Amino acid sequence: MVLGGLVAVIAGVGAASTVWPPPPAVPAPVATATEAPPASAISSSWFCAGGTVGPGSGARPVIFLANPTDRAVNGAVTTVVAGATTAGARRDLVVPAGGVVAVDPGAGTSGSGTVGTTVVLAGGGVVADQVVSGPAGWSMAPCASSTSSTWYLAGGATTGGNDLSLTLFNPTASPAVVGLSFYTPGGLVVPQPYQGIVVPPRGLAVEHVGDYVQNQPDITTIVTVSSGQVVADGLQQRSSAAGTGLSLLLGAPAMSNGWSMAATTDVHGGTVAVHVANPGTAPVTATITAGLAEASITPVVVTVPPQSAVTFRPTSTPRFPPATPYSLTVEGSGPLVVTRTVGAPGGAPAWGDLRATPRAAARWVVPAPGVPGAPVVANAARNELAIADTGTSPATVRVTTLAGAVVATVHVPAGSLAVLRSRQVTGLSWLVVDADVPVVVGADAAPSGAPGVVATAGIALGG
Figure 1 (tube, rainbow, N blue to C red):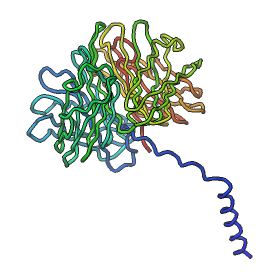
Figure 2: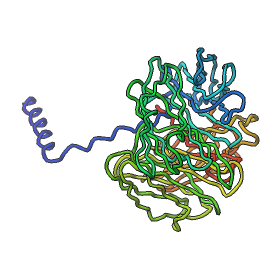
Figure 3: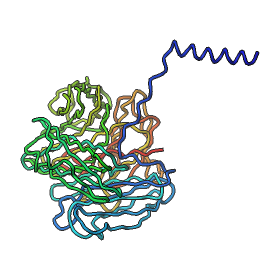
Figure 4: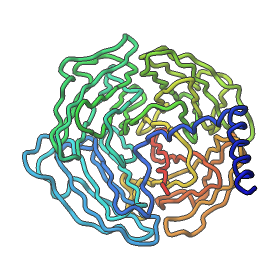
């Protein structure tokens, strides 16, 4: 009788599955190349590229390693210079529990030019961020926690005084072969000199996009690696009547149907441009939604043709409020790549770019442009922390220092935005954001000509 009962139960389950279809498969997480391995990981790596060293450097880099865990993590960094014939400079280090270590890639290196740095750590939980600075301005961008065989960068420009360079960093022990293609308002451009680029093991290749993609205002770069893997960073120098700007932009290793930015602010006389690129072969409908602290905005819907990009400008769309921070979410009917460019009406720097975040997370580290007492540029500091709840459930969020001291607790309604500007979250202290539901985190830094010119997304913590 027991056996018969068991057969009956199994039969019932089989019958039910024929009536109700199984639930849809959960989509695989989108690769970000910026998520920190969990603290339990045996080892982890970060790859930082795009800065320049030596006399006359226009983008001097400083790398920061932040450790929100409760134990010190040992590691080593190795920096190589593009075109160098000697092995890179290697240095050992320890990232203390709840602390930050600053690394100068130019220290101990010979030669000058673009550099790539590999960070290898005996454990997980540590994040890496890079700040570059020079006469044109300064910028913040995360390092990459993984290599990839594809990279996408949207929103570059080679018009007028604008210069775009692409750094291909191969931190592996095997050569990589890379091809570059570009989507522009004039169509697809595939320069022959950018096909079959060989990037040596533990080496770099630097390509000046304007050499073959000239006078283009909106460029989407596609990096395709036919052999091996690399990390791709774009370095954009912009110039206009309002002033100059410098942006370091880590490429996206994958397209995504959804992208978000925690806070955007339109200022009088400034510009905000959201570059929505579709590298695919079919049109994509993109729905652009804004989240505010106490209001809602009717979404904007745009169609992005295949192998092209559409630039959406909130500053010329009346429904977007001036001088009020709002989050931005771009949801596509197919995969996209999204980047934001902010231009200031005046001040320095006047231009900056930010790659959107492809997925929300429950835990983030928020970088600062330096450490207490040691800003990367004079008077540099974080001047606001933004937390966007892009989901359908309200979020309770706790902000702490790296060492775990509570700084603030905030409740963010679903679809809303919280912007913190208290002295506890401003300055040069690195922060950890923990939420009970996934959120999107970003920060704005000064000095700059306008909010968003020097901005950074949070770095998600795995585990």
